Image (cartoon, rainbow, N blue to C red):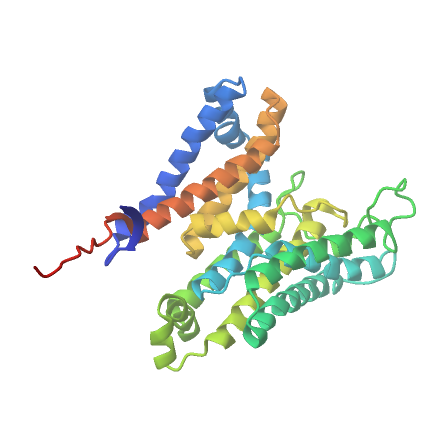
Length: 363
């Protein structure tokens, strides 16, 4: 007797839509047990995570600030995943975009550079992110290398490169020996939307990215090609769609959005380049993409929810002394349940009994 997964002939669209809610519910139940094991009141902990951040305007702004890079990166990843191309290295593309855009800010520091600085930073960051993403894409198309491994390994290259720059040639000489660049000039920072807060123009850019992705996937031939290549590769070949070209395209767009998110984060809420500018946005965005069902509107909602866990984790750490790493545990458990629920939607368990061969002889 053997337990196997058998692909379902049809799947329920209703269950597919409800699946993320089931995953969230199971995650909350699991976290309730974890809080109890840690000796914390589960109800108070859940309140700190999911309710308290929604009760004041500053926390709401912070949720939007955190959601901005998550949504932008997840939109790019969703295009890759819909095309059956697996970009796992958005974190590295985020960091490379931050470095490339910061180069302009560092070089124009203290000069009379005008309003062209910020647009140039955004363009260069997007271009750098796209080029960095093309490395695993080209290795996949030309040499058959696993894009999962190559894109993931490049994350560490980008991280160490950033670390070298802020500890070496870009270190602020007046920064008390901390590994950071000097504060960017006002012309090199993303404008705030609300005075006294941290909500910035990047949030509007993220909304425009969501709208553009929705139009691309729902109203254009290229969006149709992306969906067909991912869902039915054989049909795509018969239709004359070039899967390799789409891998290159989706990786480039994904990298560009990650790089753009990187410089928006640095030139927005941070204001300078330093190690640890990302709390793992590139990896968390993978959860956002799948939790949002690879749909632009769903990704926007999922991005806000995951941003809520970041802010809630900080409040729980202050109010209840719950370790901040519990937030990463929450996100990991959520990803597990999202993938598990998806597996049960696409497949079903089946018991298989091996055929018994009965020997027969002549009498």
